[in-house]
Length: 362
Image (tube, rainbow, N blue to C red; front, side):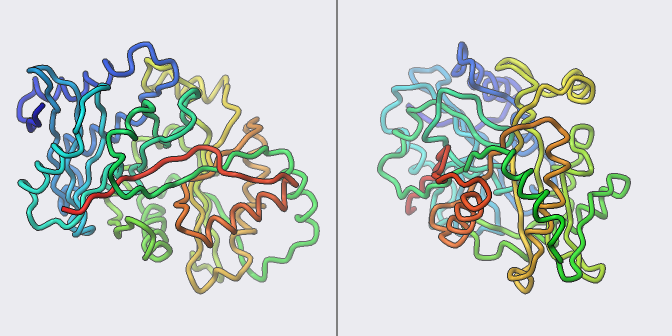
């Protein structure tokens, strides 16, 4: 077995084709994340200004048997990432071969992490549970045996929580009559000013997440490149901002499970946009990100955004939400999320899907 860098158009076709071969006949896979893969593998993007991306093929007996991309983001200096990993079963000591290649190509990097796709905003995690159901949009899916390839590593686990919407509707109706948010207001995204609104989103991300596992500060151009292709699917209600005296202090990003618009062979396109607009079949939404500036974390900002969002979410017709991913080592976030969900739903909350990243010392 050997690793070969992608240099030609034929290599690039093999890079994408191997994924389709691995999932042939799998009814649960969704290829909705392929646009992000192409964005980072092919570039150029604002992310490439401070990151090196080297797509590679894994060959076994002269045939392509897998693929990944080495990504070294100089804003996450110590880590070399193994991103967009896909591989056929039975490849043996694949982790050792990747690690040897990493040491040769990036001798100054201290750690190797498998399952981080450039940045947390692009996606992260190797799925380690619930292989028998399709993924929610924006969350990863892969065969069960992937985790076995990296069994000798340091594993960092992430989880999602799944919950019914109806108790939140009841909660919102109860609280809306009595709650005073102490001057905090909530507004929707203004899509007519998408670039300016993205600047606010980027500012809040960078201010809210320092110290978070694998966090690296973003540039507005990177987030704008990420948002812009989805502008026909994303509605203004899907990104909410909390403000105090006109100052942005927090945000809440949620969206319907767009994976329910496609089957295992399709990609999101105009047909799916029209289906979403005129015959929406989606019954689940993803509670993606909610964050507040550190100095306002004991304020009513989170509650204000959630209560504002619930009627907007309810009118879409969804009945279920899935939140995450949350790193299990982030104890405060795990406790806050489970307690809030249990208080609203009256149900004992345990993590639903599980994901992991896998780390090696170089």
